[in-house]
Length: 433
Image (tube, rainbow, N blue to C red):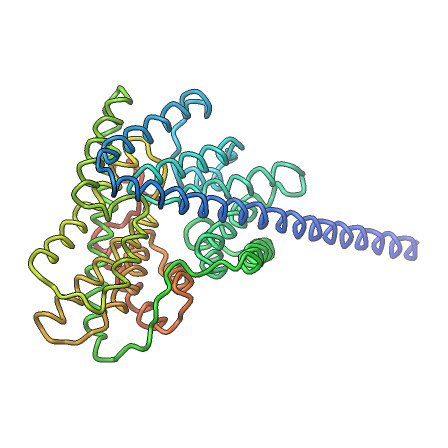
């Protein structure tokens, strides 16, 4: 009798062990697939956007008439695609991913082409935002669709969505650590064994694909060193970055709220187009993602002499960028606050460094302030300091400024949280009722 029980217990244990092994193998295989598809989508969207944005930006530089034509054309095409191709549904950005991970609701597969196409059209026709959020939602959808394919994956819904997101962020910013940290800090906020396995595999595949394609860092800058005497000014930069990020967040929430009251969508398109056209005409730096403008000021930062005109231009850009970004999104554009945060941080850092050098003879290094500013505003905008650190270090492929970036990102995040506790991702009207 005891022998029979012992044999049965052994068989049960063996069956459980085999079942766990099968689940592990399937999780590995699906993570590889998600990693490849998400990375391929992210790299494709980035390359296509860079290519066409450069062409169209050159066209508007040669013929200013396109400043009027491009925004209204881009927003109109996106509207008609949503009406007649993508089930008449608005894209809600990363909030869609939150809804999916917290409820039984799944991300429908049409979100992949919807965010891919609409994100691309928004940016290349001048919409003052970036493709990062479009990539995040599209790659999250890849993970969501994968989890529905087999019953064994049902319990790993959040993990597989995060794997897609992590691979997509890795593809955009060449930083696997930033990919995993974003998935953890912003989406999941908890770590399980399945999360580690699926996300590590997905970002490894994504980074491997980047290596094969020999992707270069987005910003090729030379960072020599940083000095302890600059720490008080770094702290000041962190506080200013926190304030600027709150301004960006409140602008997005305010304009989305106001535009939601406009019943006819074409009025939204017309208002958005007019604001975009006028802003881009006077400040071409606001066109699209704005990475061309960041590269431009990186190249001239060491020779920048602050004049009244230049100072006012920088201030106008810092005031206008959140407004133009918000109106781009509120009038139907697809995107988020990633690229705008990096843009604002770069200009804020250069402005502060220029003021310190011109009026106080401090002799700080402008390029350091630009890089730290980029990370600080992003950290405060999405409340994810460690994502911002590794993401910006990945963008420059340089970790020289790791320590000051860490300090400033924490300062900017907690400054922003003290002033306003929500981000564009976490805010909901019900929270303030």
